[in-house]
Image (cartoon, rainbow, N blue to C red; front, side, top):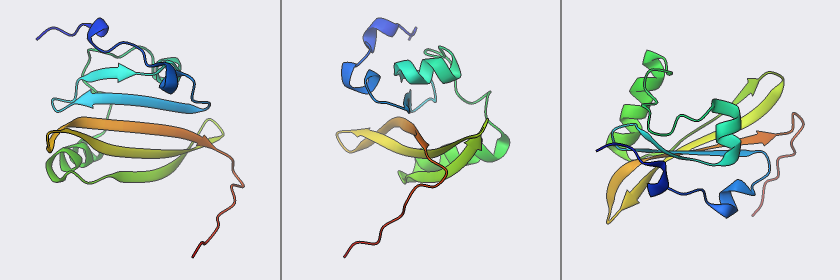
Length: 116
């Protein structure tokens, strides 16, 4: 099936998120949605496979997330900006349909609280 960006229109609430890139792919690893911030950071890659731009290690993690349905979270430092990366499967009728990645800009000195 040919990708049509009109099948996945921009979403006002995800476009209004400050410092948060949202990228969604289908189970075949084709990017089907990007919010405005994701397009600014990654370029418009809708309709393209996310596999070629990832290392072999990352490809194994992507396959594991799609296979097991578990989330993956980590932090990075990219050009002096710390980010929390949270990747999780999205589902329809209980079946895994693809992955969603939230890339959130976080301050270097972000507080951490323990709550009961």
